[in-house]
Length: 166
Image (tube, rainbow, N blue to C red; front, side, top):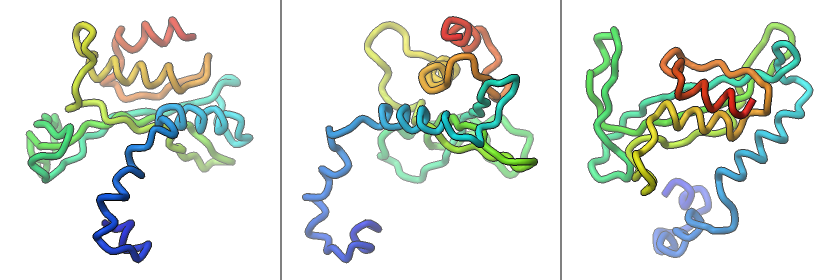
């Protein structure tokens, strides 16, 4: 509804505008891959041994809605007593390219994917969160580059696709 307020559109246009968000004109994954390929040529890419550096992690985002698509019960393993042990929400995987100049470094987002709570593929066992992050990385990252990931992803399920893709 915020878009309608900003564009000064009344609520009667809401139903007609829903098609804006379900367009078949482009695929978000393809757009993110094109964005990452364009950004890989940026002169400020941080390099380690001549190769680009990517950073990735997963995040659990709490949601209050009871009937939102993809919302499920998630466990939070944390020593922080202010965090509840269980939340209802989404699990996202994110991957960014490290850029910077001099001592300043920052990660430019390349792709953010909802990875848990959505229906799995019909073919065989559903992939784990670790396998989904590995697929995201090898799809977006340039061959021979370096990935900096959380220790949660240090497993054969991530390393095997990395080795296959170089």
